Length: 230
Image (cartoon, rainbow, N blue to C red):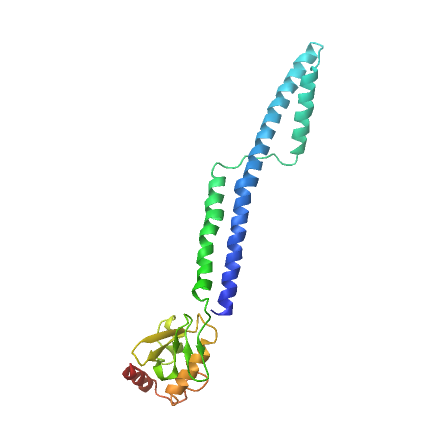
């Protein structure tokens, strides 16, 4: 797997973990806190407003709040003073559900998809030994005498400008058994060097050692030669 793709996947995995942590904090800590704060504020406001009215009525009678009422008044006033800068609002009834599904479940479900490429490509990339032995990412080994040709018809769109974007990153290694192995430079580090080496080995008149099309090489002839080798 290419380094750039590994970095992207790692960043996405970290983002998913952050998503799960953030969602969990919202669902099981912050939203209950907001609910409690809003309820505490509402209760304190009701008690305070009631006692203010009661105190006014008692004052007209020349009386004052009793000891219990005075304690309640002081406590409610203190509670309200804590929220003087911002009145706490209760969370929406959908807040917990949205945070659970979007941040927590969404993050948890996404992580396996981010980890799968690391497992799939755990054996490493393509390796072409000095003796011409080819090792695939899955660990299969093909000696040089089993490699018959390489199909460069779509490589970089040099021979076929109409090739799809996906196939322009690919070349097909043709084995003596007729089996083909698709080597994809988009996915694998240094795959382009292996493709260039095999192309120059089997078609030195058409492909240079660096994987560039030889100047003056007939693309139609190269395509025809490749097709006839299949």
